[in-house]
Image (cartoon, rainbow over all chains, first blue to last red; front, side, top):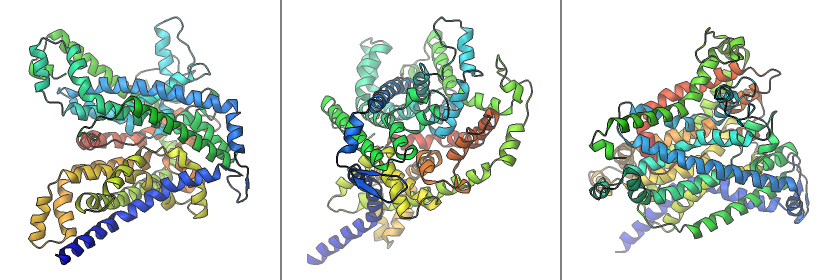
Length: 300
Length: 282
């Protein structure tokens, strides 16, 4: 039936028409910047002036020869690996705790989500206050324990990375928690019955029943969190800059921001963004080779 | 582990379970508790050593200063406006787009769905310089709609992804019934699909709102005028005053978070339902 076919085609075009505005908007704001960045990376350009000068690979040569750049890559890696690992542990532990039903469990779930929901600025400033070198309550409490080797001033060069990592775990572990909790609730209880009949302990049940079921969720969460922690700008910036030991947590995103908006080197900033993207693509490729995604219905 | 749901467990393991719950609660809530009490302490007590865990004296000095000596309400208003604008547009575009992705057959449909996931993973810092230059070209610097536009582009891929998952779970037969009863597509969407997808729509709305409400980076780069600043950058500036007033900063934190805390505890059911279908960027 030709009428039927043309009706179907009209329907399809209508469907595309409904989606087009969204697709165009997202493309303008993601694909275009990536392309524009590649182009900009070849220029020396002031962020606020219209003129630009072609420098070829000059920006990249300068980046690769800059020890501050390599340091920022290292710091971003330390930050991403440290905070992501701890978030995964805290998130899985939290999910296991909240998976049970108990009096006040809805309330505790709400509280556990909360660190993720509050504005980053607030989270960072609260932690700056908690860890304040002179008046902070956490250094005070640690001091009362009289454990040798625990520093008294945490926001200094040697220890600020720890504060950054702990604060980030506090802020972002609910993301892991909720994704894992949602998956835990879909594990059929029968799987545990079999294990219990075999006399498996709680730990063995976790390792042999729960963990395999969580594998895909954890792989995706690990990837997302790793990418987002490596590229996190606001937390290290707000923690370390405007006084303090910012140098010690000048990660690659902070370094890129400073090039672009403190020194107004837009071309250099763009080149750094490209390097960041290239590093991420390499890491993601290696990740997918190491952990090929198994086909599963769960789209977490 | 589900063990305890079946059997009550031995007293020792029950005590351990409560200890773990208390630990989780303390880890999440103590920083917030400290923020609240710090905002009410008098200045000398705020800086007292050892710190007092329950204030001896309470006062509203910090709040008075916040309301009368800073532009807090302006920042608050701007943040509400930009967040609401972002949420409304993302919801409309997201619902229509997700409907198209699940109810119309056309080539590239799955590709678009995959790309939304890719765009969702994409870190915003990489787009910083080009978006700033683009915004300057288009006259969108120092403009609330311009800021909203960037947030919309960040939140929309995720909204499409999560709404698509919800729409997929709604049987098409229900709409066919409505269509044969003489309803048109728009009516079927509004009266059949949307009520069933309501948890997903609420979750999407909350997540989108948070993207805009919490953003620091793009507000920092795109907004320079004080009367257009959002809370994130406005509060950041309290930190750059000659003497850092911790009471003021904590009071601002309370004003931004406590209404939200009440709200999130009320809607956490939807959050977890929605989160199960995706995640939230940040």
